[in-house]
Length: 186
Image (cartoon, rainbow, N blue to C red; front, side, top):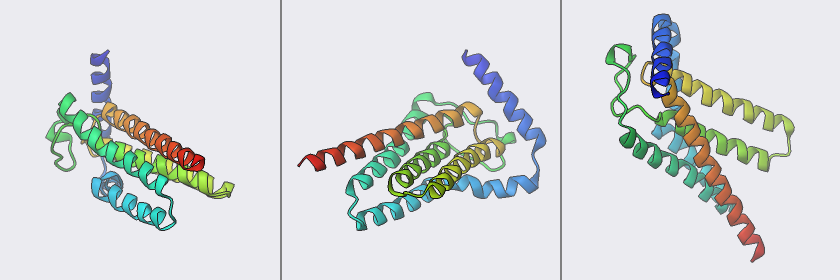
């Protein structure tokens, strides 16, 4: 099974490398940054500050668990799997460290899922909810695709990262909901 995944990963990497075009590559260098630790924690920190100012502490805690949990667990899992990145010849820029799971994909997913959850929870507007959902999907897919197109990850790295980010966002949401139920009972 692992051998089949590795063959699939390599075939996608080869296909994308063969199709690489500077006109696509340059914008994807910007898109990929949407999943960087710096960008995610800047946006997440600003959102946490806004939530705190509105005294929505349970949401701040849930968001913090989602983002910090994703960052820590993805770093931990990289060391456990110790999967090398694609060869330097494939990389549009040099990335260091291990490949599995993609931390960019994990963080972009965790933040996007949590933000979409908040919008669904706090906005009565169906249009706003639909736009938030669509933008969340675009960010998750865009960051994931950028990691592949730039040759710094394999498909399975990105999928694993997205699953991890969604899982940690779900845990953050469950904790936030539990905190709110606990506060309502007091």
